[in-house]
Length: 385
Image 1 (cartoon, one colour):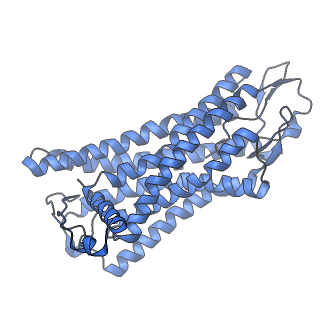
Image 2 (image 1 turned 180 degrees about the vertical axis):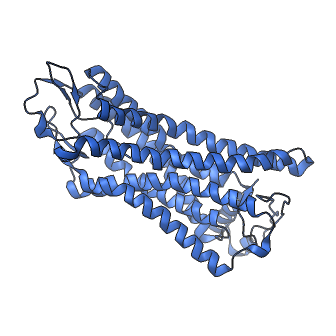
Image 3 (image 1 turned 45 degrees about the horizontal axis):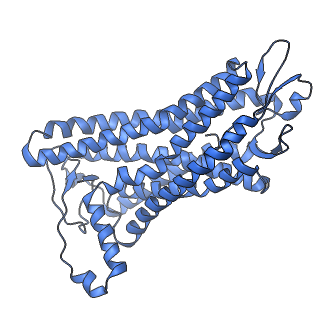
């Protein structure tokens, strides 16, 4: 996952054969080049476009994900593995959002806060972006697992085993995401652009491994941060969707399951809409490193602008995740109302207020369970309507 710099540094190529070499490799390699593609236009566009998009994402994402964390920690118990994944997803999105002000400042004035901050911020961005994608896949797996288990409560793991399972799963996800962020910690550093004189936080690879490292990391990130989560989500949600669609003709309860099925479509659709364009651009950039596809200055500028726009679109998942995974459920809405009452009314009014029971659509093949939101005996994941 390349950090949101918004543009590549000045694009250098040999005048006699017009072959391209990106400045990701090392600036010293370009001392003898005759022609330089000035990307001042790209930097100007980034200086206006990126701060606006990052500010909107920061405000909306912080509001939604902070509310998710607040409700989970104060009122809603972590009853299922999906609850744990959703809470971790909110934390990952918040940590990712915390890096955006630094990249917005970088787009306007360049990187002025040192190499250590460059490495840490870059690694945090990649780690939490990757973690969010992997957690979405884990949520789909747990929902499929709840469907596959059916109503065999006797086979449910003991409470201690379930808690241990949650810890292990979260550690595995965060561990893989941290591994994906380690190259940024190693290779990113602050370099001065020769044409503009501005500092920039970017990856600089050793000359002996520049091309191979750049292409390998790009393809690895596309595979683990997009392709793998997408394939897992498609398989799991197709299986869940088959059951829900078969139940959609069973009257009122089937109607509720049909609404849950539409939630599945929204989750997959939003994932594709926000992540597919950016990962296509990343794949094109990786192929360019391998096969030197970009041989003209204007083509390089267009690719940089496409990277800015699609990466900004990909970041909107931080704002949409709370809506897709949490706020749609009436159970969670009830917890928000409880929180509002707790903040705005007296303790007496909060404790004795009348509350309506919620209906949760269980991902079980044959049953639908109506439970109060405070029950803790449900060990499977649910779509709440």
